[in-house]
Length: 106
Image (cartoon, rainbow, N blue to C red; front, top):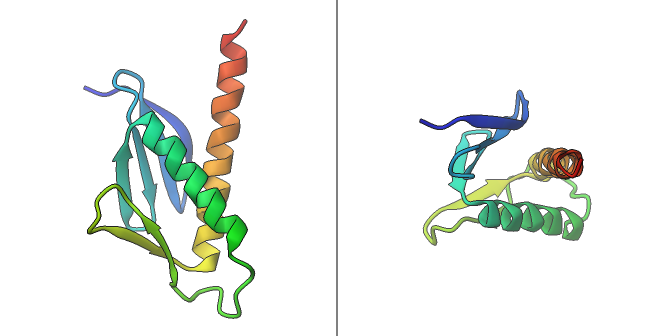
């Protein structure tokens, strides 16, 4: 039975991590992904990279931004607005994880 640490949650989704196996669950919109810590960190970096390389779009609700998953047949498709929300979510998780690491040093 997993014991989850809630890193982030709001009306758009959540990021939790099992304290036993260390796997992450990322839920956003209608998608939920389960991944290792290494995969999660790669995912968060990919989200940040996508956010930084997409300029403001004329139609911020147009679903035209593709994020690959570890399954070659499954991709996440987002609008610019959704990518911004997802980026804010993974950034907040990064802050929480770094804060936890610092606290654990003492």
